Length: 489
Image (tube, rainbow, N blue to C red; front, side):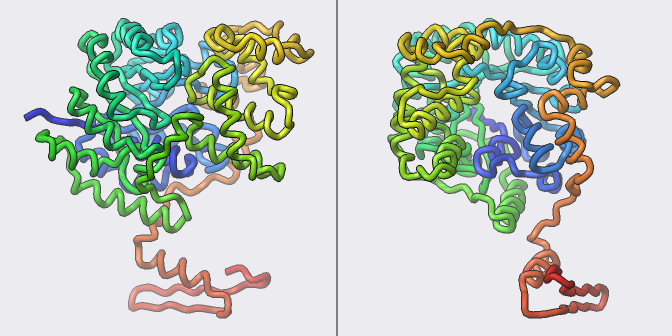
């Protein structure tokens, strides 16, 4: 009997998809040992996008997160998502190199590597740097639907990725666009061209088909599935471990995972979701429109927010229609960060302004110039490209040439002389002011779980507004809540 194995995504993709990356280190640490003891092949922990979120919004040091979690999880490899580091800006090779070096030094041993274009040169550089740092590499073959993302396209890209000798390949479906029918045709092509390298599946449940695609993957020979734990599974997140494992056993496979030890993890995060008002993932209805616009879940909410700010939320359906046109005119980029943001933002601008491409962002100008990838400039509709580049700002950007500064060059450029490599990376991505503010207002690492009776009691008592003082006493414990001037407790 063959065994199906699992990679956990709960504390990385799960909260990125459903909690807008708002999971704190204190929320992770109490259940780290459970995750470590459950038998996962690997546990995803962090990506470049988390660094900025940690510092600015969570008031946490992301390097401290990696160190603390790696001390708590010692048996299971921790994974980094190693695509772009500074998401929307130029990434000098030296800074990418420094980024993976420091991640490995702090306990990350595997890197799942993306290039937003599935570009061989992008893969080659990143795989090389991760191997040089000491990490195992997993190369993402990002799935997309368009006239150019054909069987021949994926066969070629699979051969290219396999030629880099990664630890694994991963069929990555960030938009939840795979269907069981497409799996029937695509997976055999990937397996045939993978040169014997094992293949994982990483899909999302945005269209409601994620769990079915996992079943089909298993039937077609994939033996490693990326899953999350409820309440951070389903919806726009990854399929539920419990659901996929149950279905695998029904198909006659063993599942090398201890589900019993993971039940407290789900209870822990469910309690947090209820206390914080975070989303609790649930299965979704099938949504065919997702295949048309392909805007990722996080971008959908951002697009609606952009329109709401200018009083045009009622034009949200028109913006999605516009996104379909913009993506076609941009040469069918894969709808992943940062390419999906370029398409979605330009669609919103076109709708808000009322005239197509009258106004464009610097990112779109750089896209048309090839700064975001030569494929984008090559495949862009020529008429649209001319319209974008026929403005003074485009002529300024046309003079820009990528540089390859050393870390010490960047230290001097941003006034960070004498800083550590980890501090330099944060300064380069985020800026000194936000880092200083984070350190002055650092969030406590302990998270008081609302499953604890005392925490529940105090939380509910603090909501009472009519009482000036509440006194609770037991044989071994006394606590007093008193309303101060101004009405605060």
